[in-house]
Length: 262
Image (cartoon, rainbow, N blue to C red; front, side, top):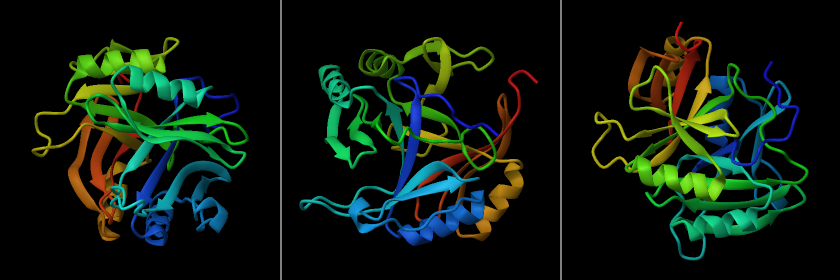
């Protein structure tokens, strides 16, 4: 089991969460799909749910709520990057052309967070851990395995994440047009220009990949439970994957991984 036993390095994806119009329906769907456990949280946490897999935190789910005459947020998975100083990261984001969407705030004694958009418009979060370090299990069936930036301007995005979050971009061997995102030489995610076959007007975005044992079987289950298949299962260099949406419209990827080059 891929348990996380050491602190996340700054710039590393450390958490994901979902904002959904119907929080309970989302919990039911993902519990059935991935085997997660989770109940709507206490009011003092805004009902936020920390879902678990094998008793380890794996992802968050919260209810979409309009604030200050603003519309409710979109139904999406948000990738959070580790920071040792969320305020300093916020300033670096602004200084390098990003936009702060939700200013730095304390989350009880768990940590500090913020939400921002990069210069191309892709939204992401920042997490400064205190008592809660982030995901406690990754890279196994039912858990997060990859975070991918699909951007409209690779060079601009690469420059931004290097300056604001310390994430470097290097070509990925064996995957033409695809780039690895690295922190201190360790690959932590991927980056590509929005694929030519993507739906028209697809905005820049971060995409969460979940590991599964059998992509075709999981896609069939997702479809039976009201999800939508955006791109049916196909074989690629890292495994067999599919692009899907949950019943409330949040996109994500599924992959049954295989070693690169196998």
